[in-house]
Length: 206
Image (spheres, rainbow, N blue to C red):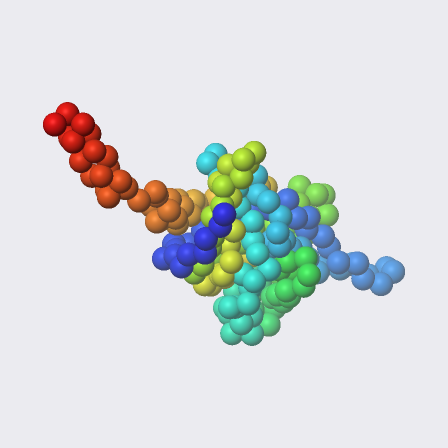
């Protein structure tokens, strides 16, 4: 059984095993276009230690990408800017798979270094930073607790990253959301039944 909740979320980051590629150009042309998926819908995460997570297709319905100021960073570092939506150097697209990003590697030290590392496949994975306005939780007999992000509040950045799959994830906000879910779904004390049983017991002894 799942229950959707509005959450007051802090900024969170997630890394995924979604490959990064250099988009092919015509024969003899060297491409500088880097593209990948920041996340994919309905894909179950690795175990955080106490829960798994997935992103519903509805999560992006509340985000107007034409108005979002999203930055492409390397390893989420603000000093390592690669592209940005408000300068039209970063393209974000929601398709049936998830959130796809694309940018031309800038002719800077970090841009040239990233391009070389992607070519060598030293950098293969993507991440993104976000806040959540709605999520839901359910219990699975085999996997334990599963969080589904149903509505993003904001996207901050997409990032090619060194470490894949949640190694740099911040889960504080998710933990608070989980505790709220648990507290609101605790069995209510059966005060009436307990009092009735006490009266019956008292009558027996009298």
